[in-house]
Image 1: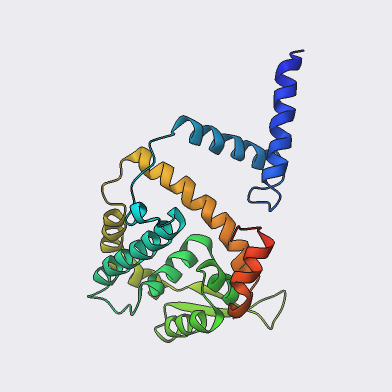
Image 2: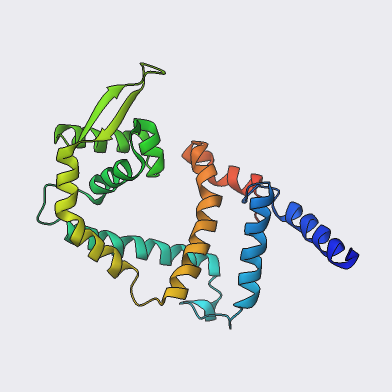
Length: 222
């Protein structure tokens, strides 16, 4: 038996446990493999630190990341708005809800709302609009009749299909001039951020307490 390798693996497991206290990764062998893969990828793709606007005057990388994500969201919304300009869709959320229902099948209203990272009032307005247009249907749950299960209707599939060419074109444009390997790297990073933020979002913390709670629970430095 190669005890040197065994010791190195044990050392890696100890490091994984320390870094995964907040369970950004599943606390099992699959989470460990994912952590090793991402750490290895980062190590093999070290590059010179990039420039960002305001860096020379002390602007933090966190500030640059936050601003760039906001900008990219606005660019994406512009392209989505163009994709539905000649349709009955009111917002990009309308067709995103339909795409989710088509891809994942029927679900409760709250499951759909949570999947799209919306608050309940906003999500219910979208669902009401989709019902009014006949693009989705709702039925009672066999498990809990207080819950309504919703699914995409044939009319909804038709409305979605009519716009899918433009929607796909919009998503292609959003990815811009990234190479395939850059797209894969970006997906890895965005997935990591999503795994961090979604559990926080799911706790429904009051807005007035959100920042202080997250700072305290995740030990951010002031």
